[in-house]
Length: 328
Image: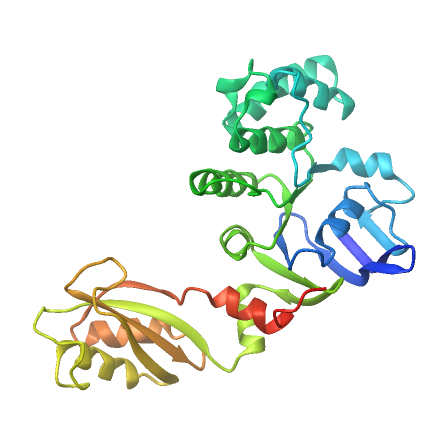
């Protein structure tokens, strides 16, 4: 779907991007992750035919963005960081306008608007002027205009910008619902947004792609260990402060330590991830993904496993390891 080869963008003598090269297959959901100012928006604008690259080649669905920009735009839906809505238009009028300028016929756009409004959950504000919308609704209307022409490629630049926690959750759900029908590129510097919505990551630093792969692949490439969290039900008689083997918590720790590949075990939370006083959460560091063997060993030893996951902040560890906390 997307192919870039040695693409750069200069503003005068200042290099904003590149050289970057990568491919994205049809149907993928890919996250562009990086600090502010590293070239994410520049890259997305080039893909959306909003900027011309200074050098290199860019193709979308086999079409060169320089040779066939109008044809590329028909295949791309783009939501910039600030939704491009007009305050004096109602939501319905705005979507009609967006559909018409993207080449839809009158019949097509009238048929498409109810579908798009339902999918982005904005049907109830169809007749509301966009200036009266909350930020959450404005972002959803921005997504609606991006998909009104049913593009093959959907580009979302900071889609959770300025949203509250509930609106962020709603936006995540909506993005997941779009994955079946679009190739999606998402730009963000908010790590959980990328981790919870994307299949693959491209990490940018100083205008260049410094890593590509899944969160798991990047973690394995950067570190000699993997982290996980396991929450186990206790019988209430153990004391988390006791030595291993002298309590229920100690017995659980001993079982985990005997699993091959385990490097370190730490009792992280006596109340467990669920806030349950009869449970305890352990952080486990190992040479590989040990969720399956650790769970198996605990169950075989008679312990009830009530939660098992990769340790939180794993992507943060990968991100800091790649960009070093520096800013371009």
